[in-house]
Image (cartoon, rainbow, N blue to C red; front, top):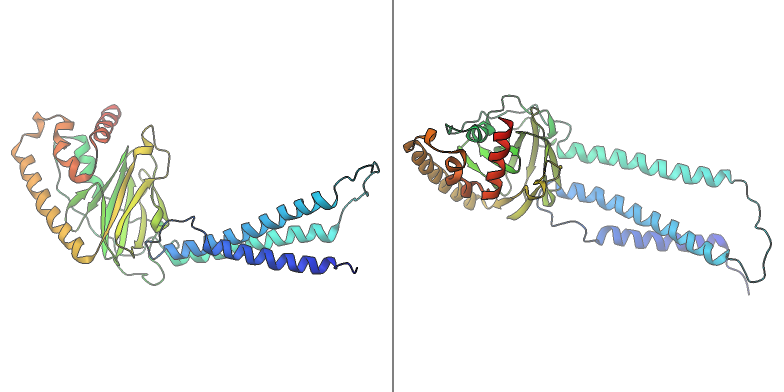
Length: 329
């Protein structure tokens, strides 16, 4: 019986490994639903890396299994193995291939970063912000100061090559505090504990932190950006699918880091206009109620209690914020 050449076995194994790795790399369910214009760019890069990782895993583990079977010790064989001191062509091969893969992935990642807007987070119009100031509390100053950054962000994900030098459709100032996210809309004066945006709009988030480093992460958007104390950062994106998606702090920021969660709600344009109108009216009514009461007679918790529901902040979170602020003061 004629023996099958090793080169033919290698060719067949290469075809099988390639087919399996491509299929798994393109049909896995590891990522959540895509909900932004930037998500396909990140997923495309992830799929390429995952495909390469599967191929390398199959080659390495498959070789180990084949060698375990073919070169196992036979019964009664007590001889020494063949002495092998090195194989220069093989060593060059397994060094050159990973080097080429890393370089190509690096070039690909830079291209994705550029297309997402990572090369130009600044250089565009920066909207002036305004908000109603709530007197009588250090925390109130924190909320109103959310929109008062005077320096345009120079770090983060900014305008893509297609939107370069174009102002965003919607600008939202985002402040991270232990342990909540505060969203301020400069064009309407709305302050909320949830991010509400219209689908298809070019949204610019101006991020900052009150106390420690936080990280604003929306898995469905495939976007994450640190919020840094004293250093403004930016995140610019376009949501493509209406729905409610989780917002997670991805940077360990203290004892209640795990509870620092909120959500981004992507509306249709009609729903967003309705939400904006309703909240402008509601917040104006709340402001009138606050003005009618002397803030000096209220504790910090009492002062902020009427606003916690609208901002999406729980009583426990409010209490932790107040205690933390009082300790810093």
